[in-house]
Length: 300
Image 1 (cartoon, one colour):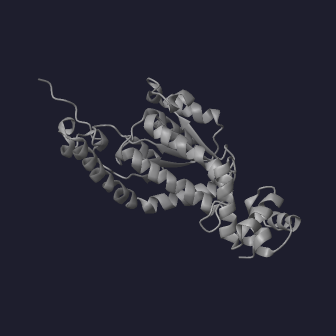
Image 2 (cartoon, one colour; image 1 turned 30 degrees about the vertical axis):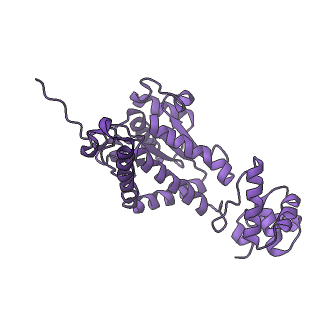
Image 3 (cartoon, helix red, strand yellow; image 1 turned 45 degrees about the vertical axis):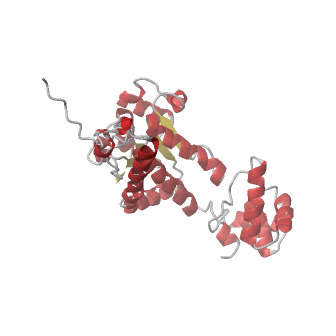
């Protein structure tokens, strides 16, 4: 009987704790999954120095006119799509600032596209279509560390002099060797063998949350721990904006409502008005002089 080829990717190996998964009760299954999930935060914690270095490089790239570009396939690609999609409403940024490329294109967001991730050339092609420059930062997301689509994108990014970051669950694999910074929480074998939407996907979500949130805070899209650049696209968010403005300024909600209306629903302008006791024109002027820097406009 021929021996089976050994897969060195830990995410593809069997987890001894879940060998009898199909015979477990619902309570046993969820208890096991919860126990395995607890390992994820600790593994991400070991990668904090690399995550912080990536944040600094992304901030530097964006300040020079570059973009943050996520590249992935399947579940990993969808994590990038999700994080990129959340940046404009949360931080008021242009949809062109944080971009996500997924193997197979938009169709792959909701369904599997057969063979889409198997071509290095497609990864390069999609980055070319986005007119990649040396100022951009490309974050390749691949739980396996071997996805050809991501490998091709990282190779092309390196040739153009763009900063490269890898987010993977298998350290000694091609994407890790190609990237300038490697973020590799090694979460180990999944409860369901090879299903990297589980622990690996959770670790990716945690890492991308850190990257985008820390980058946007460093770029001034946050005041204290408040979302001062959020988009007011529905009633719930409009109410949240009022609470944010009242909290940040120390004024009553009624005063915040008046200022926000006068400021054309611009939270930054409204906050400067309330904290400095000035009118809308003067508040806009102060912000313009300092390039929108809220702390400087407030003299803090």
